[in-house]
Amino acid sequence: MFLLFVYPFLAFGQGKIFYEMEFIEIVKNNNPIAKKINLIKDKNQQSLKFAKGSFDPKLTSDNNQKVFGSKEYYLMSQNVLTIPTWYGVDVKAGFDVIKGVNSPSELSTPAAGLAQLGLKIPIGQGMFYDKRRNEVEKAEQINNASRIELNREYNDLLKDALASYWDWFANYNKLNIYIKAFDLSKFRFEGVKSVYFGGDAAAIDTLEALLQLQTIQADLQLAKQDYENSRLMLSTFLWSANNIPLEISASALPDTNNKVLDLDSAFANNTDSLIEQNPDYLLYLVKKKNAELDKDLYLEQLKPKLNLNVNVLNTGFYSTLPNELNSIYFQNNYKMGIDFEMPLFLRKETANLELADIKITEIDLSIANKRLELKNKILNYVNKYNTLASNNNIYSQLVRNYSILLNAEETRFQIGESSLFLVNSRQQKLIESEIKQIENYTKSKIAYIDLLNVIGNLYQVYK
Picture: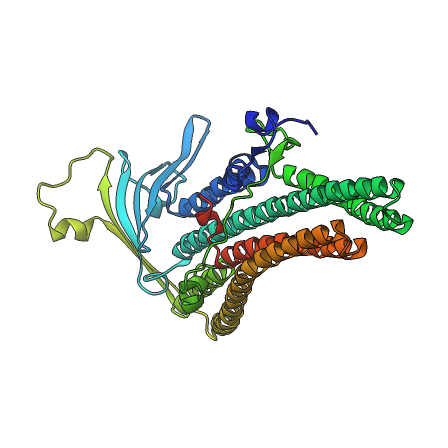
């Protein structure tokens, strides 16, 4: 891993803030997972293009000739251009030259060849719906599903990245708490030791001060470890535009001025519309739409196959048609046919239809269950966030009050009205309240991120 810096302001100077939104912007633009998601978008577009290829015009040509002993046995050249349409009708244009002593007499054409223009019209199965239309519509649904899944992956990526950012934030603040407590305990220990050597303090007080110093020192070492680990973990999300992994400078600071937001009441009172943004819920809707498309196809397959082929014929490719295309001309120059096919029992078709109905019912049940699950999850995160946000004010008051108690206890200790044990106890309570304040604040940020992720608009919020 290359040890590089994210931005110049992280590499130069001390105490420069690495803001949350700047971090997310780097993740969205440079993270390999984000880039991979963009590639998948292009891939899905090609899949849809592939399905639409069923409606591409097709040119077929079959040419055969046999000559032996200067005798032409046959020359057969059959060429057809087929243009499929969305409504099941195929437009066909062709030009045939079939001649020779051994050519089939019923297929023989004039010497100039035979041009034809016609239609293949499904009168029964395929008139209103067919497999080609089904494949294109399902490809569109697959494209929609892929888009939804990509948004979910984006949201999951940002969720993990933001959780890592706030873990770094929490460990940075915890480290500062222990650094401040260590400096204070060290100052107190040195002071008590000086008083002891002056003969005005008991030896047990120096031991008491030393134990407090060593306890905080051990906690400080663990805090340093947690901070470094969280900094490295945060760096795993950071890459340069040239796909080079980056590492955050040790001088970078998290944004400590980030405020807790008040949740709009719409989060709790409008869960139905919020549910409809969730990727998992949207994917169930896509599955249902696919099942309904299959049902439409199976319903169409209950009809008999009855195709009408109508072709107008003309001698030669460039021959001039009569001045008036009257009914007599069409009566004398045409080729017509009917294809018919019908299974006698329709067991395959009816079974497919029943299976489609069962699948739709299963999906409907899953949708109902998913709606309830998401509603409860949204309300859970709303309640969790509101509780944590409310507790932030309580912990702020606790920290302020414990600071007052510690200062008062230190003053009493200096004038001989308190003990070092009580001073250490007050300091420990202050440290605990400060740690809980940071943890509660971080949990409130994570709860907000989790709520946005469940709704599915985390990526939209962090644009």
